[in-house]
Length: 244
Image 1 (cartoon, one colour):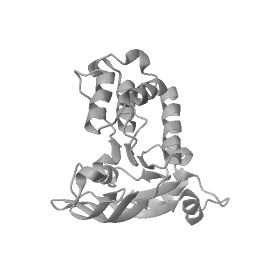
Image 2 (cartoon, rainbow, N blue to C red):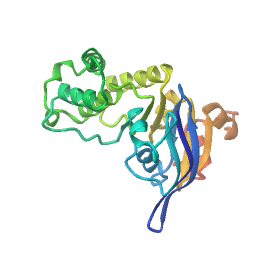
Image 3 (tube, rainbow, N blue to C red):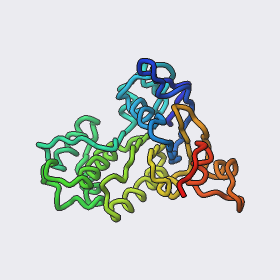
Image 4 (cartoon, helix red, strand yellow):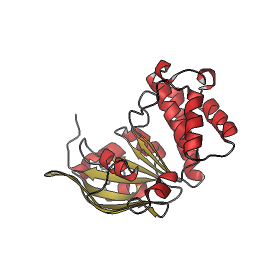
């Protein structure tokens, strides 16, 4: 559903991503982890069609982003770490706009259900500029889900969310994967990755250190008792020393 082959992104003399290849099948939730500057956001932005790769092939649901970007983007949703909304639009108007952009027929029941799921019903007629950071995040997620994308990309999705919002989001990601979507979650919160993800991709300096299932990751980097925590696994893979 998400496929990346030999992806390079170079800025001047800086190599942000170097020869990255991986895939995310339908129904999988891939945790994308790595130190700051590892290339996580650069990879997500390229998959979202925001930046062009210097080299390589990136495809969504069989559509090459370089050859048929419109078809690819119709099948995906990207929720950035700081979603930008239209300040002069209400929550409901955002969903109306997304429904028009993606040609979602009979969108109102779907939009109402999403607003209720993320506890935004009482705020549906509020302007985006009146919303808290967490509520803006919820609106972005609702907008992303509305057209039922086959590939969903999250960059630090828990920013600003309260405990209830975190619980709802985690359940929604699991539900979307069970329904057949391929999901990527980039986060520094390793507990989120361990709780939610079926697969793991560890990046460092633009290169993949590991790509596989969580079970395979634990087998490759075992702890003293035979099973390392994801935090221990991360530090071993990136050859860093965990803080005392």
